[in-house]
Image (cartoon, rainbow, N blue to C red; front, top):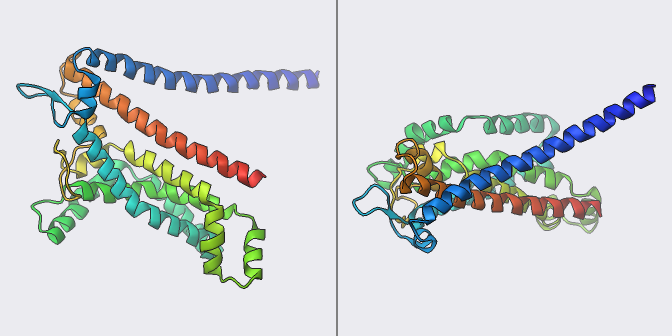
Amino acid sequence: MKYRARLSMDVFFKYVFKATGFLVLALLGGILAMLVYNSFSFFLDVKPLDFITGMEWNPTGKNPKYGMVPLILSTTIVTFGAMLIAIPLGIGTAAFIAEYASPRLKNILKPAIEMLAAIPSVVIGFLGIVVVSPGIASLADLSNGLNALNGAMLLAVMALPTIITVAEDAIHAVPKTYKEASYGVGATKWQTLCKVVIPAAAPGIIAAVMLGVGRAIGETMTVLMATGNASILPTSMFDSVKTMTATIAIEMGEVPYQTTHYFALYAIATVLFIMTLAANMLGEYFINRFRKYHAA
């Protein structure tokens, strides 16, 4: 009887977990279907090519313009700037934790990094307004520091926990035999780290970077508060920019229901969904390569 009861419970939970897995896929598919359906309504009024290649975003003007180029460039420049800061800092921190930090220091650093991930984005955005923005304005002699550089610095802080955690796991998982072989031929610890450990952990580190990119692209509140929200073509990191996420957050609450402008925001969301999904799928691809590499 006990064996039958355990067997029935195993079968029950097998189907429960299977159902939850399919439910997640259904939710993801439902979100994508909703975005595509409403985007299609927008493309009945505006040609997709005009939307993707348009150089001006001004949906409330006398002659409304629905050009995505300023928003895509703004999102790209802020994300790229954030990665320029977060990648070397994140990989360096991960290498230090995995290879140089003492167990006591490691036990302090890892919870601190995880706590950094728990800070609400609105708090980071507020710090960007009251601390980072005046500093940028003073150093660059600008009227204000609400620009792409401000947003990039804040997004770098938000992406760091993801990059550090995944990269540290990748570096820590490199087999000890690799290091011992390197030490055996006379290499120093630094040479071993740079020429053996990091190359061996490269798939996992790339996955960490791609997940960090996905985190930065999808952030809303921080860039909404810190980048100035100007729908112009950015020419430098000191220009005010308006990202895709900030555009949706700002305009969705005020736009008339089921107008062209309303459906245009769904079209932006679809493009953003595809970009974020591509970054995360690329990260998962490299994580799977990393796991297979070490399993072999």
